[in-house]
Image (cartoon, rainbow, N blue to C red; front, top):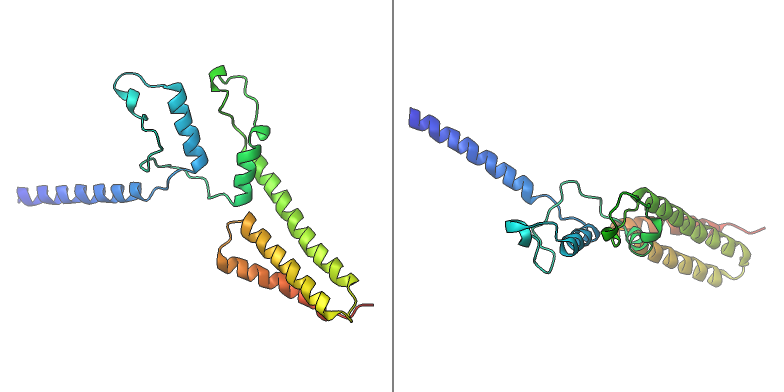
Length: 191
């Protein structure tokens, strides 16, 4: 009886270990920007001494690095702005040691606000530009109106595809809605 109880305890412990291991394996990897900052810090500052000195000595980031609180996958526009303009959006920090010059912090909220403004502006320009173009092309020139709808729909699709992480199905749905709005102006008589 004692052996059976011990086997049950060991099986329960083994199952809990498997569940924990499964959970750890399912943790995502950090973003490339976070991983690069992490590796740059450990390769330039060498904060460990003794047996831990070579802990992060491999030349390339390891695939075994995980993140506990991942950032959502940023869209392409967010990545572009953070990569090229992050330094200009950074917050000065007087507490930071001078040796950390290459490391800077910028709030994600600033980038999110810029991305929201740019996304809304691009969408509004494409929609209003298409409507105004269709308004000024006479009804008698139906070929030019259809070509304008095609050109603006293509520009809208390219903008959505390049600036967001939208999936193919989402892009198709958004493009269909955009084209439907423009088709209403195609069939409407002009004054």
